[in-house]
Image (cartoon, rainbow, N blue to C red; front, side, top):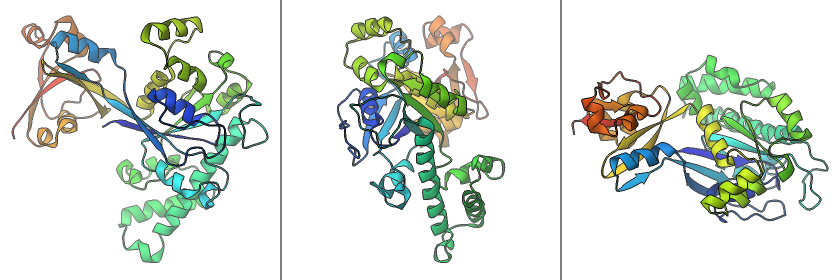
Length: 357
């Protein structure tokens, strides 16, 4: 499974510029007028992981494959989008398909870049987008609970939808749903308002390390746990440089990590994801799983037959694999374990599955 994030926000907040930077491409058109992005652009990016490189080196692998993250650049939303304003519901529907939502928030002043509102106010802008998502959810729930559509949902789903409708109609938070209903069923509702969120404060070049009044006020209200500060323009500049030039430039502006690394770290954290590896002469590969994933379920990420016929997993931690310089020494030195169906895979585990076909 790869992480899929949708980049949303008001028009002209820097979504397409960030998308181009993250995907190191010019695939997304970035121009200075509202609704520049009509159809969503999708970019699939390898997740940088030094462990893949090291394991590949030790195993002398013919190829190495990183896990991936997909970014979806969704058209700018405006107030009234849930009722068809701007480019309307078409783009709200694209958000339903992502695992997490990246809220791109304008936190910079500029006379050159249009602003759909008369002032810069990141808190107001976020509230506009989240209100439109809630209104879109309410409309969707009401349609599904309509008499003619009720026959298509079971009792459990009906109870959740009725609860959601009551909350949305009364302006209540949907965060308490998890304490009342099963998470798997909640996820099947397709609600926009409950998707995990990352807030990206897009700042000018002078504020990338220190923030500014806009980011300070935003963080006071929404906290740091899901918020990162990025300059989309700087990210674009970084991704046009070669490796050595990139490092020199980042050192010069005292930027410790790229926006891509920040987003991946935050995304894996809010979605509770881990990485395990397979490594051998043919291939070293990273695989993304949910935290607390059992060994058979991890095997199923590779192929459903691996899960169905799971016998056991040869398991070595990343650190032991490196210290022992591979599988053979790990086994000879007692650092390779045979784990059964109840084993919970840990981040960094190097696994070799045994299974019946």
